[in-house]
Image 1 (tube, rainbow over the protein chains, first blue to last red):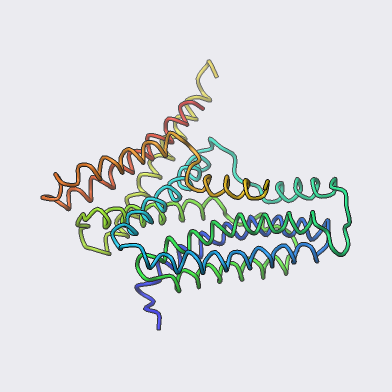
Image 2: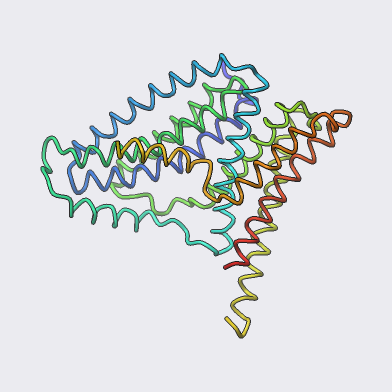
Length: 252
Length: 69
């Protein structure tokens, strides 16, 4: 029986992060399906899914052999680096420094590239299979990492896996219905939220591994989330101000 | 081989995108580990310092990028 109150942050973090990765993988699988046919698109996806299941089984089993303090520190560092990468990008996008990701444009460029590739487009199409396999494997490895990192330390692998599977099912279902990339997903808002959550979890686990005493114990995680959110929003505000001043200055 | 290299690069890229940010975080993590013995007498202060350090590093990094345009 899953304790919902204890596991809901892991389910939510895993669900949101996996949604972003699944949307990116779906764009390429749809492009392969539209240009090279659905058979290679689905074969590549199935092969990648099989590889990911094997990776989860290997790493999931191996984690139980690592001492808890070392595991907390190592997972915390990886979560922090991963979360900060997303958070940094989301802040810069929200501040207008770098462009927002455009799934429709990515779909168009992927279909264009696939059309220019030679080779068999019906039946056994190595290019279609490889493209689909690579996209699902690369995005899926991020999902596997998120599931393991979010779930491994607190014994929350099952809730984190449920969150990721729910995200994959939701994105695949919507993709199946629409047959076009999910261009209207607020990807930057999702990355912003996930970056904050993963950075907070990472900071918490590093502290636990180092033996610090978090005020309020586990309840300090919402406090860390609030802290990173405040720091990020202040940064976005300052960046927008810098941009406005730069655009208004005579030298610009 | 190309596919394996691409996957390896992708995994590395999961954690390292901006070398400046990664280096700053690594230094703060190392400083916290080395000075652990001193702040164990005030473990709550250590927790707060750990978070504040990461938050400051994030803010400094994005503002640095914004100033450079």
